[in-house]
Image 1 (tube, helix red, strand yellow):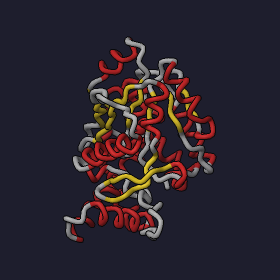
Image 2 (image 1 turned 90 degrees about the horizontal axis):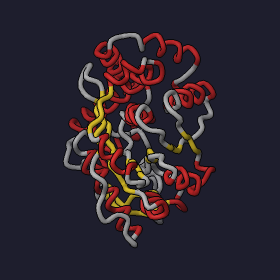
Image 3 (image 1 turned 90 degrees about the vertical axis):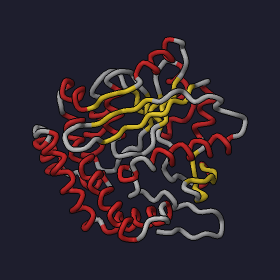
Length: 295
């Protein structure tokens, strides 16, 4: 969706807008999101289905209100990328605050590989930038067919430090090697991928195709799993990255139990800010045998 939005004129406009104060940019971003809510009909339908499945306790009017807030957060995250990609180091440090950074330094000092468990909230790019300004990390990304977006995205992610960006074709061994060399792994496992790469475990009470890589990679690298959540703050307050305590008793010998634990944790965080989760993704596209796709 984001890739289709970026053309050379759109990138030029985004670059110009990044000079604005954040509170004005946030206001414009929410307006862009409201516009996308009405124009991006397919994504609106996807978000509406996801919210109906995950929040059956809400009535239709409440879900529509939540969907509109979700698109407003999406719009804001698009415009805020201008600051993330082109803003000065000083401005970005003021924009994105990090709580719990000392936990990562302690693990690295102990020579412990790290997996940062990062759910798909709209602030994840701000969180990625905050981490790359403090550590040399490894991430996995999907190359974009839109050459303009690919160039801007790739260069923006590698602005600071010595960042390693792998593709899925590089394989798990390259990721494990990078973690063992001291690079925290900025890991986003909560999207719908191919059936052969997933197992079905609950997410909001729904059997959901989920990548089991967190358990496998943690075991292969001997890595600590550290929760990492980026919250978009109101108005001109920017973002806050929250780094949690390393998970105890993880991984276990039960991949299903480990993946269930991951989804339960992600769900618990989503419930604290449902308007900021990536509901425009077809999270429930892959269904158990005999069930049809809801989209």
